[in-house]
Image (cartoon, rainbow, N blue to C red; front, side, top):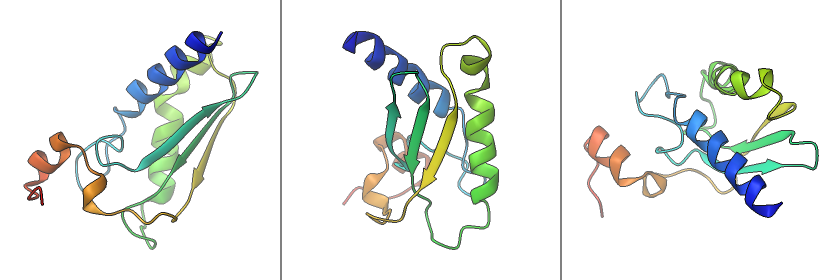
Length: 110
């Protein structure tokens, strides 16, 4: 059963890689904005994430894009409800980005 949950979590993460941060043009997974994906016993999904800044005007857009990205998994009954929890602790910084994101954005790897 644990393997099934992990497989579904991996699929959710794969779908989240299709969500592009509108300001930076890189997906939210590689930017390090996704802190956790949790599945309960009914396969409801809770995405815990942050934003690059507290006052990000595109928070609503990103949440909508996440729900849209996971829509196919929902329609096929593989996951239940999707809840997106935006947190600011720990605060995001550039060190959370993947190597891919750093290269795409030209950020030095210090």
